[in-house]
Length: 486
Image (cartoon, rainbow, N blue to C red; front, side, top):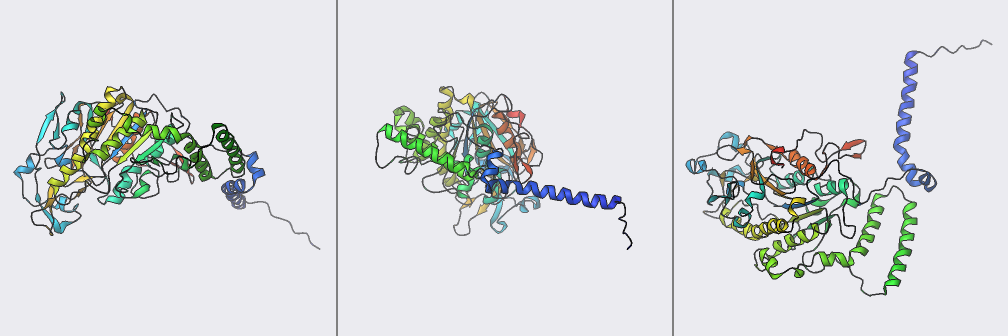
């Protein structure tokens, strides 16, 4: 019987078999997490990544320690608030150019170029021009860095809001606030790191997705607190027990939770839920105290406009924001209800209403933080998802009712406080306010600047998600807007 001689391994065979090995190794690596989570014995021997809200060291010395984000849902009209364009008076009534027409959402309702019905005046030593609609904010002009050349990528509310909140027009990505607390944690472990004060009248567009964690660990989710009544529902127990009994019960519960958690080392939602319960126990006194604006003097409440029906709700939330950041909360986000800045019609009366609700509280917030020595350590950010067009939008249902359509190509945002060069106007738009002609600022630039002022390099703040090093600023080029940094 002849013996078969096995041929020598060829170069092609070698690489073919080696590739199988590489694929097998990759598959084993990908399945490792599943094996670890399903086998407590293996999990006990493995390394467990802990995500919590303990204070983290920033990449470099921060200029600000806390962030207050004033989100103006709907898209405020920069042409009527911060970016005066006298040439619109000269061109009043002229039809839009082809370039503008291509960016109009409702072209059938488009009218001619429309000047602002409001007067602009220079304010402060810096001489920043601000509309008559914002007299309280105008008094703080020398603390503002007004960015007139902000640009975004979408003209519809939902994707544009996702872009402003998370750096992408798609849902499911972490919000800016979640990224901040992921990178820095929080100083006060008895209060949430990231607090959301939405409008009692209703959720904003995109709802709770505005403060979601996406694929970041759930512990970084924004905590929604109520500005009237109890800050959180079911925060206090229905029946009071003596302190020793409560301490014993919480100790036993802690042991049970830890035992349950140790058997499920990869369950981040479980970690977040247990952390939330533990935080709720610590918050029973601190949260109620932090949000109790009745402790403030009558003069302070009046300064915030709490005694005024129009500004009472927003004023209460701005005052709460100040009380929260002075107690060590890292991020506070304040929303207005629905889309009050979405002035497709009745521009004049609509903008007056918006400013009556928000101007006095915001001016008071800056003033109050400054007089308490907190403005230097608190970054305040103001803006909507986009701006408004330089031409009129005609409401066919109401004769003589004019508004402005969405404008993503150029709009105004501003920052104040920690690390900001106050009294600054950055960027410029063309003579009718349609597009930037100087220093455009993308949303990614905007986010990179926020992170920089809080002591973080946007390129270094990374989370590994499905094998990719994800960042708030994504993979597109982004820069810190150094022209507004002190």
